[in-house]
Length: 274
Image (cartoon, rainbow, N blue to C red; front, side):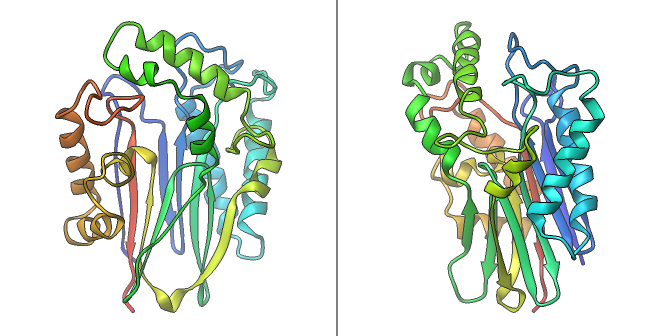
């Protein structure tokens, strides 16, 4: 089994808060939710620490094919909690969190779990790609995002405006009517999108953090089938290179309004021989 992983930080002077890893039959990607300066998280650890810790534990749990992916994620969240409950306020609404995408090849099936706004693309021979993402965060964002905030990208006032928006989002995290993400509540794992696909129908799989999906769902420069074609022909690194190239042409977000000029971007890609 040959899989490829490519990742780039959103900024060279900040930690990459994405996490990606794979074992034989299990591929995992987490996108840590970046916290702006001034946000009280109640945690002495960084978002990158949280994504790495939860991601590694989840990968280990998910390799046990006797348990569901939801159970595996819930167990990993509980273990991560235990690792910093003594030093951190896990009840703080700003405590670190992360999106989660995982696929597991189990016999004749491909099992998947998607929590929050990272993306899973499943390529199927002779059919349109299956694109799976959790749209609840986007619905919350549509209700809260202010056009004025996006218009401030690259200006001094932007950081203050983003902090205010993030604080609003934190109050809707892991609540009915809001959105669900991996954080301190193991019950969030039950809110993930899960399912199984016949493995015989699958020709390739791609897991992408939202920083790596911009060419398709943010900028409209590629369709999902085009994204898969780039991955198949030139690899994940080329998709990230094209993403950074497009972002560099619009650093102030005038053509493509967005909260960050560049975001952490990660792709995990697996081509299957059928």
